[in-house]
Image (tube, rainbow, N blue to C red; front, side, top):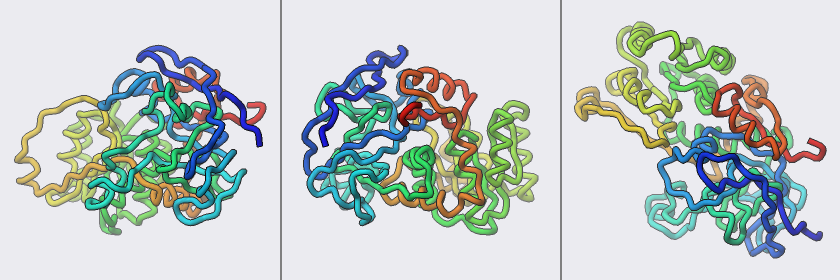
Length: 372
């Protein structure tokens, strides 16, 4: 099959400016272990918005193709790419999602057995598009899957938008909950944040059998979604003060506090609040704190309350697979499709980013379907 010479892609050349649609070269030879995919769709993540506005605490070499929650159809396979990361056969025409790279030979990959913290990792959307293989971002008609990237075949019953969401938002939740450990049927769980990750975490807590799930967030439409995903109680950050929210959680737990607090809000102040929502000896899981904000805390808070505070970053191929399996298994129990909002063409990508920033949508989708 003859590959096109160029792929239309949304490129960020300067922070704080609109993305520009450009023609980016398509590599004509696919190296061993690599895959070229024709993008089906790319859901939008809050991180995309933060990157475009220079609000991430990590260096990025511009220009880049933005977007990192994508699903694509295999267009060409490099030698040795005939199986995915969980052993399933891959052919041209199959749908896949794929991970950032890990080298497999650094300390974090081997001794620590934490490949998501690979010291030599390359991540989609963070690599300049001016060097081969160019196509390392999701807002592009084609994406190049690097040889060191995990790749997972999408089940037939999982739609491409939900698979895209699973490739970042949901795999982060799945990985974080695994890092946390078992959610017990006796646990009261507080979820901070009702964005996509917080809503998905609410669903995971409910399906895990938590005794009570309390979601904290805004706006009201997101709180309604939290109820649909299994929250027993919802607390608005717009109408209740932090003190009132803490009083509610204490009252709901006979004065103890929550057994588990999971932070997906991304606001530094949420961290300070969450410390006081967890009971003595409880667990506090941090996932949303990727910005550069700071707070002041007393270290004695951790010691005197014997708190377990755990950060979790990203996820690996097994988490991508597990996220899609969760959707496949619980599609009738949880309203995943309600998280997917409007579909946008590539040339409407700036409108989609604006909708995400303004929180008027949960998961806007940039789609590459024919005729879209």
